[in-house]
Each structure stands twice: as C-alpha cells, then as structure tokens.
Amino acid sequence: MDPVWEWILLILFVGCKSQNFQPGRKTPILLDTLNESQVQDILRNLSEDDTNWYFVPLLEESDTDLSRYSPQVKRQLGKLGSYIYGPSTIYSGHCPAYGEHENATQRHHEGMKDMIESRFGWLLDTVRRKLAEEVSDPVEWMSYPYIKMHRGDSLDALPSEFRDLALKVAPPHRDQQFMSYVPKEQQPFAQTLTFTLPIQVPSGGAGLRCFDAFLDKPSGKLLSQQGQELPRTGQAYQQLVSHLPYEDVVYLPGRMLLFSGDQLHAVSPYKNPISSDRRIVLQGHGIFQEGVWKLFG
Picture 1 (cartoon, rainbow, N blue to C red):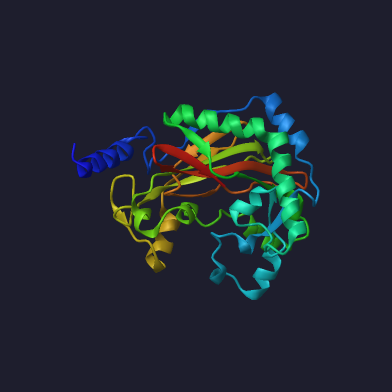
Picture 2: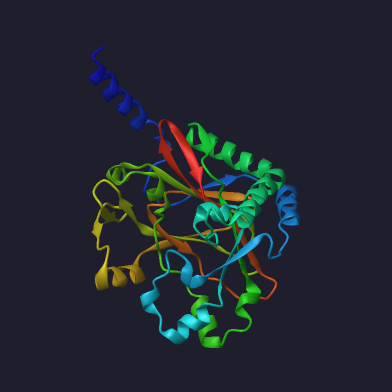
C-alpha cells in the first residue's frame, strides 16, 4: 500500500475511535466509583495540615474575572479560596513556583508524589479503570489529578455582603487545560473530557451546574444543544449567561461525573454553609492521543 494512504488510514482510525464519549452532551455521565468504606478511607488519609495542602486564593483561580471586582472586594475575596492537596499542585498550575536551584522544595514535592502513590495509588487506579470502562478505550495517567477542598470556615470572618457574593454561582467556564498538551494547530480537533469525583460534600449539598451551551472546537462557535450559535464575548455574552437554561447535577460522595469540558459549567451555589463544611473533590481532565485517553490534573 502507498505510504501516504497508510498514513491517512491511520489518522482516520485514530480519529474515529472513542465515539462513545461525545462532546457537548448536556448531562454528565454518572459513574458509581467508590463505596462508603473507600470514601471514609480517603478522608482518614487527607489530614488537614500545611504540609499537605496549598491554599489558592479565589482571585488566582484561572476562571475568575478580575475586572469584575473593586479593590475592596478583591481584598476580601483574597481571603477565600481552595486548598489543593499534595504534588498534584505541580501539574495543576497551583504549585508555589520553584526552580532547579531550590532543591529542598523540589525534593519535598518528589516525596509528596511518593506519599500520594502509597496512600492513594489504589484510588488513581480505580478512577482510571472506571473511566476506561465508560469510554471503551485505553486510559492512562499522564500526570496526577488534584484533590481540591473548600472549607466552610473560610467564610466565617467575612462581612455579610462579601459572604453573599462568595456564595453565588461561579462564572460559567469551559476547561482549557488541554491546551498545554496540544500544539496550537491541533487544538481545534482535540477530543477532551473532564471528570470530578466528590469525596465529601457540605451539609447543604453541592453539585455541578451545566449550562445549555458548549464550544464546538473545529468551528470555534459557542452552540446551544439545538445547534444555535451563541455570542462568546462582550455584553451580549453576559446577558446570555444570565438567561441560559441549566441543569444542576448533585454531587454524591463516590459517584464520579464524566462530561465534556467544552460545555459551559460551574459549581452550583453553596447553600446554608456552616463552619465544619468541607467540599472535597478529586478533579482531572483527559485528552485523546494516539488511541489512548491520557489523564492529567
């Protein structure tokens, strides 16, 4: 066979795989992944101390629009944020920066990687196998996912007006982490996924808000589920977001959500918080390359 045709057939073969997982689907796939005993085992190993968790201010999150806030609001919201667990911070972009000369910090993170494998290697393997069952293709870890925690007591010292602001729905966004792993010219054709595995939820519940809009990568258009093109920027987009239909998918400990990161989504509103609340999730992403789903944080 002509080598050119062999190359074309290989591209078609790889590109036609993984069609069980379609981008733009409105409702996440729900996968029972952990039983109650396994969830409790994870919580026993997630000790809350500065050695294992890194605080990430809300205003440093990648999907936060800084231009929306006055300096006073920024000062208050800087006290809020999430806690990222372990060496996954290296891959998620939330890790405190270090260079090759900072050997102590680097050794610390290498040690944390070993700790994650010893404590949670079984968890990472369980997540990988469950995703492989669903997408019907090989799945492997390219880097660690991250475990994120939001604490109810972080709201306690806030004035009421800022507390109310913090409890509102986060701005909808789509996941773009895959861009770090794909050349720019290939990004419009990348097949991607996002997964969230709740470990603990607040007393008032938690969930994922999925909006009726997703980005069609090849065309670069934001589309409704019916295929209608929607504005992507400016005032028209802001007006659109406030009126978009949505569905709230409830977080249950041990039940993983699998969905397309191309869909506009956000964390559901935080209701009736108390100081002891914890929202803990294992979160990650995947990209389909060379016939394999490669997972990362």
